[in-house]
Image 1 (cartoon, each protein chain N blue to C red):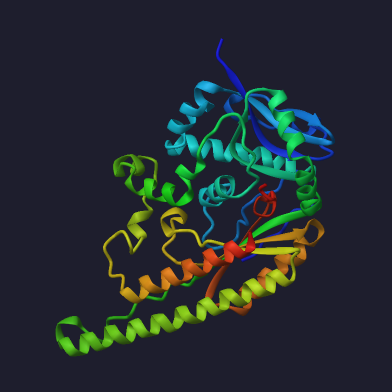
Image 2 (image 1 turned 30 degrees about the horizontal axis):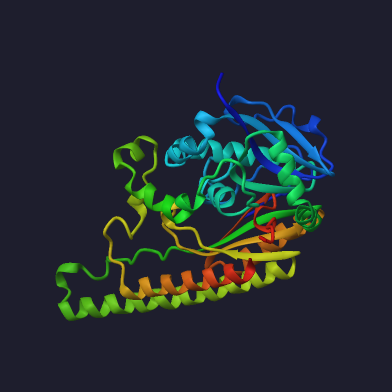
Length: 254
Length: 113
C-alpha cells in the first residue's frame, strides 16, 4: 500500500459538497470536503510518492507535470469559487490526514473568515495592457546601399527616439487605465508585468492588473474595459476572467 | 476586444475569445502559474515544499535553459519572437526603462500586499 496525503485546493464557506461531484481531482482522485467550525476545505487524496517532499521537489521542475497540476488545481478552485465564497490555496498545500486539515482550519479560523468576508460575492478580473508593436519601417524610400553611414546613424537615432516617445505615452496610458478600473472595483492591484518569455508574446506588457469586482457588476466592468480600449487605440487592452479571487485572498501572516 | 461575462456560474470561460491575440487555450499558462504559485493563501501543510525554489522568475529561467529540443517538441518556441533572446538589438535605454518599470511594479506590489 502506498502512503497518501490530503491535497488542499481551497477553503470555502457554505459549500454543498454535491456540486463538486463531477469535478475531476488531481491524480485521478475524487474531491472530498473536510468541514470544521463552519469552514470547508476542498481536498483529495494524493500519492506521497508523487506529492511528498522528494516527489514534489522533483516534479515541480518538470514543466508538463507542473502545467497539469496547475491547471487541475485551478479547475477545482474555479469550480468551488463559482458556488461559494472561496479562498484559493497556493499550489501543493498537503497535510498527512484529515486531522491535519482540521488543525489548519482551527489555527487559521478567524483569518480565513475575514478573507471569505472580503471576497464573498466578488470576482477577480485580469486586465493587461500591452504596448502596440511599432509598425516596421518602410525601407522602400531609402535603399540601404545608397545611404551614408552618418545618415544611417541619424535615422537609427530618430527611430529610437520615436519609439521611446511612443512607449512613454503607452506607460501613461497604462496608469490611466489602471486608475479608471480601480475606481470601478472593490480593490485593484498592479501585479508584476509578465515576462515575454512566459507570455510568448513579442509586445511588451505595460500593465498587469487584478481587480476585485462585485459579481453582478462584471458586465459594467467589461464595458468599461471596452471603452478604455476604444479610447486608447495606441495600446492593446485585454481582459480575462472572471478568476477566483487569487490575488485578493491573502492571509495576514502571524 | 470584447468579453461577455457569463451570467450563469456554471460554464464560464476564462478567456474572452474575440480578442485579437487570444490563443486557443482555456486560460494561458502564464496566468495560471502566476496565480497558483504566486497568489492565493499560504498555509503550511505537513509536506514542506519550498515554492520559493520555483518562484516564477526561476521558472522562467528554467524554461529558458530547459533543453531547447525538448521545448520545441512541446511546441514552446516563443524565444524566436523575443528580441531579448534572438539577438536583435536591445539598447541600454530599453534595458533601463524595463528595470525602472520592474522596480515600480515591485513597489506597487509591495504596497498592495
